[in-house]
Image (cartoon, rainbow, N blue to C red; front, side, top):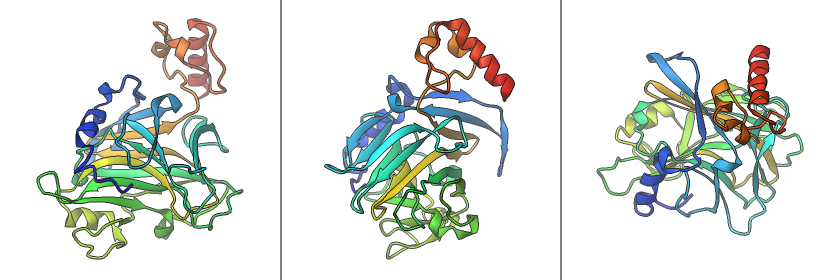
Length: 300
């Protein structure tokens, strides 16, 4: 996106960045602690994101919610929370984008991490699935995009987007169709949409660690998420398990077509009325919801 959020929309971003300001913010389920490189323990938060959690807007407009799916005006590009394809890495679903034209673009952005210092980030990743029906070049997949203030909040200017694309990370494996693949941005090769410290003429293809070292004051300025286009005409692809690790915490975003109960407590106090089974069927009462939780926990 071309809008500099350092100049316009900073107030809106500050409000959106706090999940509590979003009346229907995604549900966070804290999972067990796990080890992270560079830290003894870290809390892992699996966040279920569904259609009800996002706004749909035209690109280059300030976000109105903590999750926004952006497209271009009059573009046939689509984005949808779907079951599958195949067996996603988390749950039963994923977020699938379709960009029929080379001029199309779809971007699913989250704004909960505005102000995060890049030096504090120790994990970035996601999983992708390229539909075999795609007619785009075989190297095309959705990318991870992060809107960044590379010279920090105390200096003027500095807007850019950092982009991770699997095609520039061949050490992580060859891009395939019809299978889920997992990619890690830290370490990884990224490029900047604009010149930054350490890259006088963009794009420069650099290790994440080199970008951070050359831009020690850099912070997340706007959206963090997945992008498809431009130049991805004919690409149909899904993403899931979008991940960001910061110091001792890690957020794993699980894209789902339905919100399912994870614990018995999710079913209580009327919660069962806003939940479904993995196939989308609704519960008749609290007891059926709890029975579903017990069954899925046993099967897991």
